[in-house]
Amino acid sequence: MSYETLVRRSWKSGDFFLRDGEACEKAASGVAPALARESIRRIQRIQRIQREMEEIAKREAAEAAPCLCAHREGIMKLAPFVKFREEKFGAVLFETRSEKVYTLSPTGAAVVREVLSGADAKTLAERLKGKYEDTSGSMEKEALDFLAQLREKGLVTE
Image 1: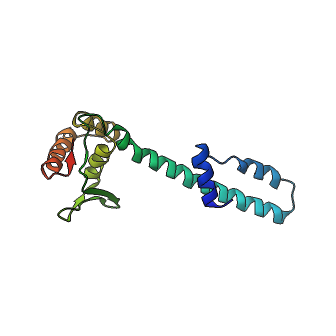
Image 2 (image 1 turned 120 degrees about the horizontal axis):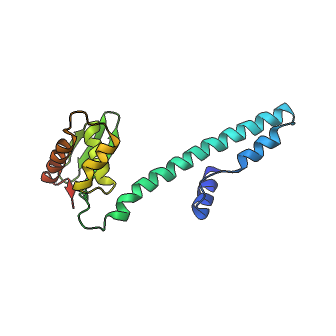
Image 3 (image 1 turned 180 degrees about the vertical axis):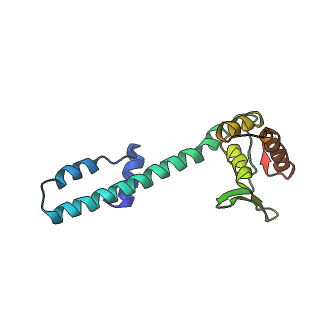
């Protein structure tokens, strides 16, 4: 089965999990070694495709969250001319109007991810506290200050 066929079948059925791997394992037992190796390769290929499909479904579900909640009043989002991309060092915000690039630390990237997931100013700090340890007690103030800077530059809107 080709990858394209798998994707089409998954989107039509809504099922992103392969179930014929178990059938291959059963078929491989008690078969000639050459056939068993081919069955094992097929199982590995199916498992790799399954992991890829689950990753795609997880990513697209996360990307859909802002779209589904953006109509609520008070919900923050990136301005229409701002693009966000995560990098190894943190993330980058690119403002396409003035072609300015803002590099973000991992902490700044976490704040922008919460904005993208539909957090409002009130819940943003709470979500961050739930995900990260705040030993100094300054996370809430710093996150809200950074958010104010993003608003001031016109990178975030409500």
